[in-house]
Each structure stands twice: as structure tokens, then as C-alpha cells.
Image 1 (tube, rainbow, N blue to C red):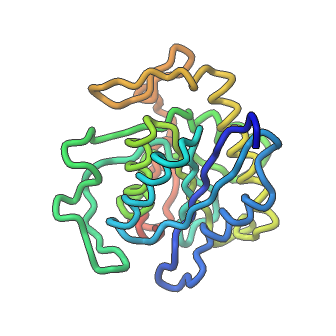
Image 2 (cartoon, one colour; image 1 turned 30 degrees about the vertical axis):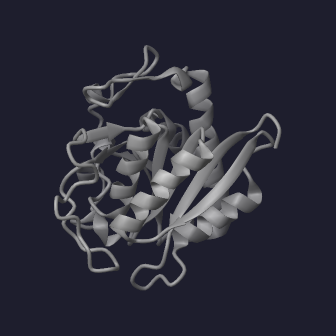
Image 3 (cartoon, rainbow, N blue to C red; image 1 turned 30 degrees about the horizontal axis):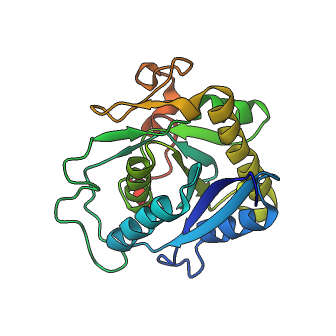
Length: 242
């Protein structure tokens, strides 16, 4: 597609009771409906495996050179869409579908502890909540394969990635309601990158935190929704999702 930009959307493979993962089904649906005339959408299914997910993420960034990568994951028992702002490098102690857990419990040995998306998720979530949609922002993605994959993608893509947790309950669990919402959210993220100059983000070699003169420092956000623990009582552990 001449003059187009590449966006990759990923979903996860089978996990527990989900023989067809809802996140992968959503990625397939987004591929079918598209994100606009100038956006070429690629989709990838990521196994719920630490080792295999690292390989898939590295391949995406090395071979497709995308403008942006959107990772979809499932938060079991949740009724809202959750936009994850950050990913942590350490603390991964739960085993994947292969029974494996990284010996170092880290995504990247000696990598920065926290990486942030170049997209400021807080105003995105506010925009959709003003329209009556159940969209929240979080800085705690659960320390399992979703966050592990997100960290690796932020690391390879210098912040040009997003993680969206989709619900399994409530009105947004319906594909008819979820698909148009996800499409609009991703288009809003892409627009923010373009309109606010985030395509020119300077990546700090020390903190690996995106810096932009038009972007409010994420470290100064104190609204209750920024911390998942303060806004949702879905479960005591997010990795009941992926």
C-alpha cells in the first residue's frame, strides 16, 4: 500500500479456558475492519510463553518496522477497557503455558525498571469516558505475559506501543460493542502521536522514558485512576488475565 503506515495489532494464543483467546479474536476483527485508508494493519498471535513472546516481538520490530504496535490482552472478570501506560521489567514469577518462568524474573536483563508508552493514556481514557464509555487508565499491568510482552515491545520500539486490556464481562464483552470502541481508541492514539509531536519523542538513554515538550510528565499524574489498585477491585492479581 503506497504511502501507508504500518500498525501491528497482536492478541494472545490459547490460555486456560480460552481455546480461542478473545484478544486474538479482537485483533482479527480489527484487521477486517481496518484503521483507515492510509494504515496498513498487520496482526500477530502471541503464544502465552515468555520465550516465544520475546521472539515474536523482536521479529515484529525487526521485520515490519511499524509506526505503532497495539497489544491486546484479556482481564478476566473485568467490565471495562483498560489502557496501560507503563510496563515493569522485574517481578515475573508466574509460569506460562509451558510451565516456564524466567530465572531472572525479568523481561530484559539490566533493562530499565519502567518503560512508558509515548501515548499519554490518561487524556485518551478521559475522552472516551466523557462519551459514556467504560475506558480507564492504569499503571499496573499485572506482571504476567501481557506486561512482559508490553515491556519487550516498548524496549524494542522505543515506546511506540500500547497495551489494551479488554473485558470478559459486561456490555463491552460483546464484539459488536467492543470492536468499534477499540478501533476508535487506536485511531485516537495514532492521532495523538501525530498532533502532539510524539513522532519526534526523544528517548532518554537513562530512564527510557519518553520526553516531549507537549506531554505532561507522567510522574506528576496523581488522579486515582492512574493506579489500578485505587480504581478497580477486579481481583487482587491482574494476572488472572494474561
